[in-house]
Length: 139
Image (cartoon, rainbow, N blue to C red; front, side, top):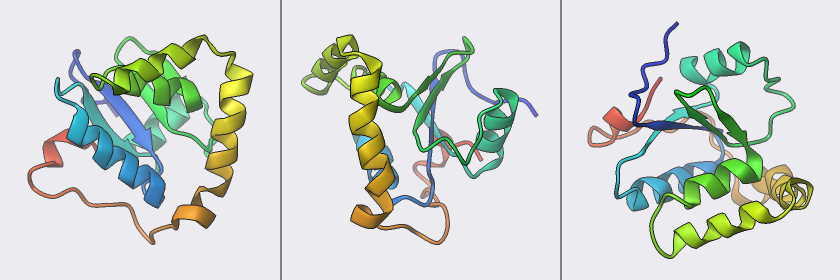
């Protein structure tokens, strides 16, 4: 399988059944003024391909992933902060937290990720983008 990601795009892989994750994707879509991001659920073909290719255990990954053509993958708080840093002012100011040690940032991230279904709920299936957004999603 080949990932159909244009050179100038970055791919956000997210938990497609998580309400918090789906809300976060909608937030990024609404604030991605430079049209940088595309999206794929971790449960879809593209998500499974990337998890397999980079030997990422889907049971252990409780995270959002940011993938670029340069073969760079960012996880957890690093992915979230790199995404925010590209969303324009004032959201881009969150990128300053990348200087905080990863173990501290991911401690907070892991706590939220661990409780996300309990706090925000879960869907039975991945969200299906409407016609206007289909071009931003990979299967």
